[in-house]
Image (cartoon, rainbow, N blue to C red; front, side, top):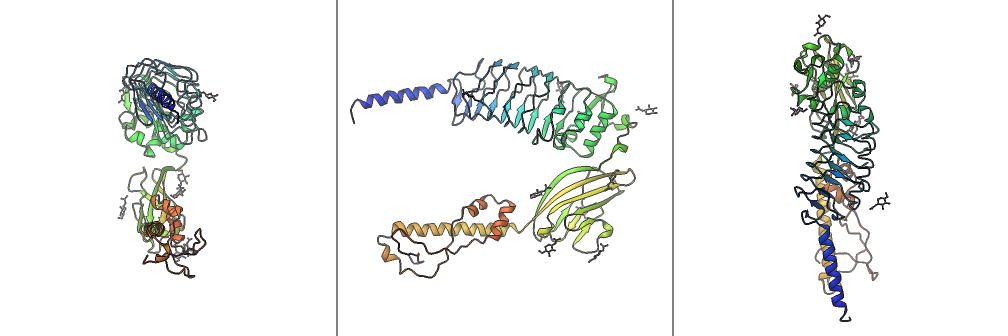
Amino acid sequence: MTPGLYPGSFLVLLCLLHVSEETCPSMCLCTSDTVSCSSAGLAKLPLSLPFFSVTLDVGHNHLSWLGPGSFNKMPRLETLRMAHNQISALGHGVFQNASGLRHLDLSSNRLHVVEQHYFQGLWRLEELLLFNNKIAQVEASTLSGLSSLKKAYFSLNQITHFPFFSIQDHSHPFLTMLDLSSNRMSRLPWEDVKALPRLVQRGLYLHNNSLICDCSMYSMFWHWDLRGYDSLKDFTDEHTCSISGDPRASIQFLRHTRFFNNCTVEKAVSQPVTVLLSNVLVSEGDRVRLDCQTSLRGAELSFMWISPSKGFITQASINNTVISLFANGTLEIRAAKVNDSGLYVCTAVDIKQALNATREVNVTVLVPAGESFNTGYTTLLGCVVTMVFILMYLYLTPCRCSCCKQPKPAVTPITTYDPSILTSVFSPSPREQHKIQTEKHVAFVEPMINAEGTEWTCESGC
Ligand SMILES: *[C@@H]1O[C@H](CO)[C@@H](O)[C@H](O)[C@H]1NC(C)=O
Ligand SMILES: *[C@@H]1O[C@H](CO)[C@@H](O)[C@H](O)[C@H]1NC(C)=O
Ligand SMILES: *[C@@H]1O[C@H](CO)[C@@H](O)[C@H](O)[C@H]1NC(C)=O
Ligand SMILES: *[C@@H]1O[C@H](CO)[C@@H](O)[C@H](O)[C@H]1NC(C)=O
Ligand SMILES: *[C@@H]1O[C@H](CO)[C@@H](O)[C@H](O)[C@H]1NC(C)=O
Ligand SMILES: *[C@@H]1O[C@H](CO)[C@@H](O)[C@H](O)[C@H]1NC(C)=O
Ligand SMILES: *[C@@H]1O[C@H](CO)[C@@H](O)[C@H](O)[C@H]1NC(C)=O
Ligand SMILES: *[C@@H]1O[C@H](CO)[C@@H](O)[C@H](O)[C@H]1NC(C)=O
């Protein structure tokens, strides 16, 4: 080694230190993959930020504008928090090269119009927070490319029209939350709203708008109410509409329905109302009770179930003790079998009002869970013991020959390491549990040949 190399490498080291220091701006806090520059008095984004950051928080600052490629040098960015700034517009290509973004928080800013180019290319975006801005307009194709979107919050803005038609089953298959509450919508395009995917309707929040009372509005909410959506249940009192647009004549329309007596909603029920699927997981042999709780109330209800293995079940059709149907609609299976698994659909019929409602229950009957866990556990234990024996054999015995007896031609059962079983011990999904059950866990291993070509087996006394 030449002596001159030392000062040289020292300089390089200093230089590297300097660079890595520079990437975490002094007003920010940098951890492994997170940079927090919140409440740092920033008027602009820091010029250099660690390129490997996954989370960046620049909330509670004075940012007012973001230019093209603002996050160009952060290709791993997934979460970007910019709440509580003064951003009034986003330039073209702000998020170019930031297509890994999954959570974007622009709430409590000053956005006026959500332009269609804003979120272009963010096809991985799952959560978009835009509440508490000054948004009056959302351009039609703003949400078009956001095919991974799960939750979008537009609450507390001044939106009068929203492009409901741009949300469809195939364009937004994962969308389950669309919050448009506390805006200024007075008349909605109910045909478009009705065409929204079921999951979106279920997660659509429209309370505290300036809705005008009319039958088409009431009809839509009446159906959602019947399905028991949380958005209505949790904000019953905040669902108001005004008579002919007069804000002084405001009605809590989920409570005071008499104003809509002349509407023909109840006769307009053409399809049974389906209460969303619930899942029931039981072990074989368990007693299973499936409730048929729908939005229909009253003593005049009759119930009917369709089961995967037994077809139609009504109270009249039951003549065995394996299954029973109570007057309140609850179906009971005495001892569930694996092939009782499947989709159970209950229909509650209110004969008087000519209404019916259905409830779906997805029943999965598993072979007893404890058993499959035990077999996996035994496998794991056996595997560990075997490994210890092998290691002891390889490293602890000074002379291999003194420990091991003559190799035996007979095959010795030892437990083997099977990675698929190991992983399934830790993530026992029903299917995998089943697999453990069927693939027996003790394997008979062929005698192994070591590098020198001599057969060996490990004796228990070793
Ligand atoms: C941004 O992405 C484009 C291709 O999409 C690439 O050509 C360009 O070099 C990237 N810019 C940066 C700064 O990474
Ligand atoms: C209703 O919306 C207004 C603004 O439109 C807001 O100030 C108010 O807090 C909201 N009320 C509720 C209960 O959300
Ligand atoms: C319902 O219709 C009747 C007669 O058509 C009318 O007198 C009444 O005012 C209407 N009620 C409401 C709330 O519109
Ligand atoms: C359920 O499985 C048993 C055997 O395990 C079989 O005899 C029976 O026919 C099956 N029932 C149905 C409805 O598939
Ligand atoms: C009663 O059970 C028998 C078989 O045990 C079946 O053939 C018959 O159809 C059942 N009757 C009714 C009304 O379901
Ligand atoms: C229905 O009745 C059965 C038997 O009386 C009871 O076990 C079950 O809890 C009831 N279900 C509901 C939803 O009340
Ligand atoms: C549910 O109601 C609709 C309309 O009232 C009717 O056409 C349908 O047959 C009913 N379904 C059942 C299973 O009763
Ligand atoms: C019911 O549950 C099983 C297992 O959890 C699942 O594979 C199946 O797709 C579900 N069926 C429906 C209709 O959701």
